[in-house]
Length: 88
Figure 1 (cartoon, one colour):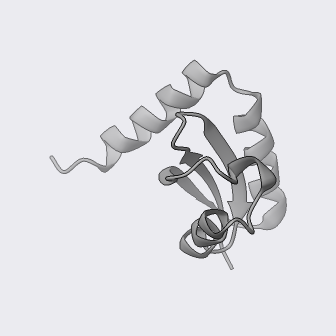
Figure 2 (cartoon, rainbow, N blue to C red; figure 1 turned 135 degrees about the vertical axis):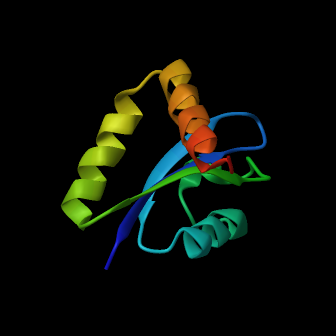
């Protein structure tokens, strides 16, 4: 089972980082208000980054590393990921 680290951009422009096994389900939970307390009332929510990791421990370590980044560093990570996914 793959674990995912994801970043949501909230409606107020803030970023939320989390871990899940199903990004779509987790986003839906956040939107329904049963996700993290932080995201309640901050919609609409958009998944702007996701990264697959082989196990829960690796995902939790990566989440912690991303949370230590500054906002500028997180935005760079998101932009780099988007650039890699663009068709050439």
